[in-house]
Image 1 (spheres, rainbow, N blue to C red):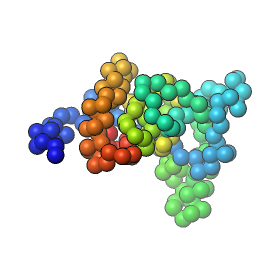
Image 2: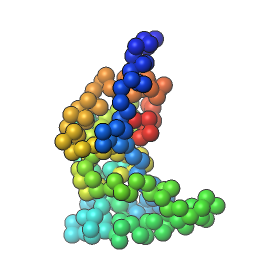
Image 3: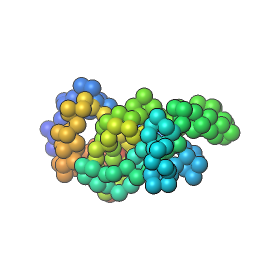
Image 4: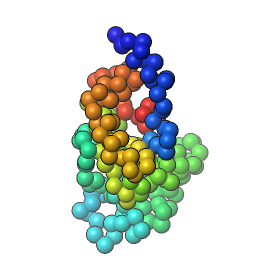
Length: 181
């Protein structure tokens, strides 16, 4: 039902991952009760990335343009405890001890960008302020800071939502993966 001209645009136009843009999947703890809290459970003095508990965008219901991060992740000493646990978790299952298979794209943590829920009725990116880590359920996109306002606006449009769902081949509750973006 989609015209050939429209389908050709997917090949003719530049990919999202061009001109300084990228989309990434974040971390999976393997033990949320140990490593995650809601922000009000952590003393304010210990809630910055430098002090140990860092804001975490984690998916949830789709909200357009802004969603206040409510979760924090235990990230003391550059996440050393979480990385050690992830290595043990994987090794204990015979998958090798590479923590980076569970804790992805750490070089992008704490940068400003945008985030969206992995599964939702529509694609709904929202601002991700600097200082946040991101999860596998709340993927993140990055672009030059000056481009973020117009980029989030375009990605929030109904037109983009329909085109993205067409690419994914599913219109119900698709999985809006970082790789597909």
